[in-house]
Image (tube, rainbow, N blue to C red; front, top):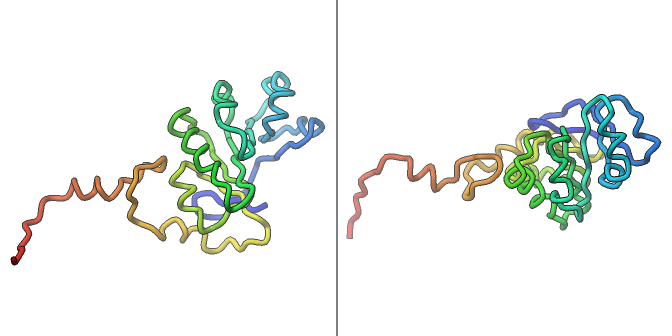
Length: 172
């Protein structure tokens, strides 16, 4: 599947292991939570970066104690209407202080890209049948935000308070 990083297509050096037979891969490896729990000691002894993939019903608290061991956390969007990964991303960045790569996988849509970035995602695995053009433009479609978020963009209220006061000429 194509990978989007920094708004553009990127090479993906990570391999996802879905079965124990695939754990012998030598490069960067993403494992499911189930594989992590079943083969934790083996995975800790491997050479190379390790990532974990959480399903939408698997909260970040399940890996909080091991979070420092992961270079990447992939959060699944199983369908358009399931937004739990947005909350999980914010928890990983803001509560747990995760600073590694945070990847959105599954039903990743261009229209939601900016909102995913605001929640802390920095890479996106998109379906093969989706055109890659326009993803960078999606990041700049909204330039005013109202709430603080994981992307650290200043909300409009902060920008307003930092501007010098302008005398108003009100005619009553």
